[in-house]
Image (tube, rainbow, N blue to C red):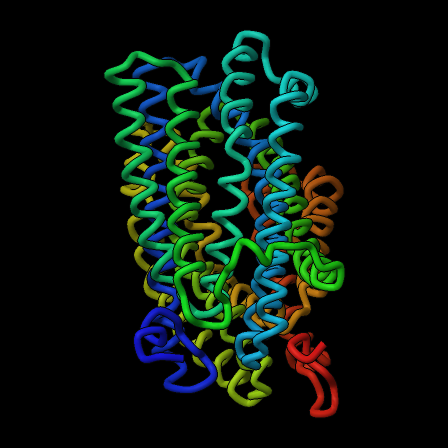
Length: 457
């Protein structure tokens, strides 16, 4: 690989580990922050310039969109695991097959989602219980958004391929372009052009198309072994099986945990609007606070995959230790700040005293347990990079879904209170972390010297 190419990707099988982890994770973090910010701008534009019913329509559509896209992001994660191992092993032919199969899979999936989204959107939204007063806007938004499914899925897969070879900077650049484009088009179509939810949806689709084109162009222009050539696109059954074996558990994990959180929200709703608003404020703050840990989780996946592909197992173990040190240091600092300034942070979202009280109560009850989260995120990322996505899924779903539902439905009724509901988070975090640690210490997640890795299959 040329010196110029090395600047574009991070080969994590050699060099200073902590520097590589930070260099990989920081662009991911900035990109995630940017995505949250431009999603917020989307909501502001819809709520302020179209109306509350339009905002409800977009929100109701997004819940289903996130569920569907979340499943596909899991499949992209599976492709990333396979590709990172091939890249670490420098398995050129297998790498070509994996990249071209993954992109071909996106094209097929995108077409299917376009047909389903456009043809069945009224039925799907009705099954979701969408209110009649927002149904028309919901159908319009849903159909336009899913008409761009091919762009969305292909961008996520292409960006996942780049991250798997250690390039987290290009997806950040493309996300910046997409975000700015989306905001400008929102203003042009909605604020100046007077369009409704269709303007917001069209702006999103155009932005996704631009980010997809930029990602695909990067893959076609490289001289490295992950180069994309459209004439070589085809489905290879063996590769599809490997990608789905790694990806479906991750997607299932995301979807099931999302559904369990809906049940937690239903229990919060029982304590009234002030509790709902306070809890919602905490979730917004928590979403930003957890982004660095999620970024280092992805860094752990790529780092582990590449080093297992290169059979550098001791380096994988050192990566865990250094990643944990970075994440725990961050969480220690941010937890202290969040605990001290909980009232002020909640007050950003509402000045209502009761909302601030609930938000502060939630933060100060849960934040002392934040040190559990980086352990789970780093070990989960490591398991995925090692190809143990099913184990990671079983641990996470078993605790964050099954145990959480048992606690909510069987134990909370004996001591009903808002605090008791909130304790479902630290209790299930502890259970998840305990099993994560036990598996890393006792499980056979690293290949034995005589075993084949995915890169050799």
